[in-house]
Length: 119
Image 1 (cartoon, rainbow, N blue to C red):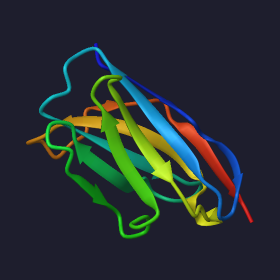
Image 2 (image 1 turned 90 degrees about the vertical axis):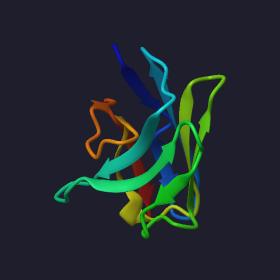
Image 3 (image 1 turned 180 degrees about the vertical axis):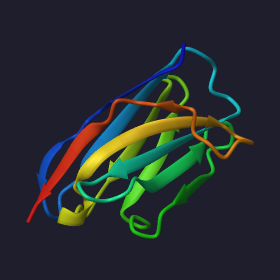
Image 4 (image 1 turned 60 degrees about the vertical axis):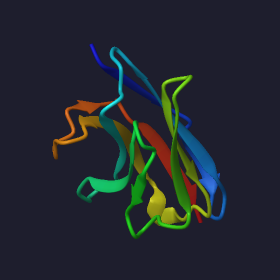
């Protein structure tokens, strides 16, 4: 059974940094794409970044490009999201998700971790 568990959220001042981690278990994730999404109050869920577990190729939303970096650690089976230059508009619950590379839909989701950026 696939499990995704996020950690690393918290409260940070504008301009600060946080590092989120997603611990993935339950299967081999080769052939999977791992993604980070966020949900802010009153807004729709927003794609943040994704990475291919096999190749390591990454893709970012324009809103976070140049500030956030997604990476994976094969030895620890984790996917990380380094967030720098955080702004109040980055405040949201951040979710880790996984899908098979060739599918569009993410089938597996974590429980989310809260990120709050104060001005």
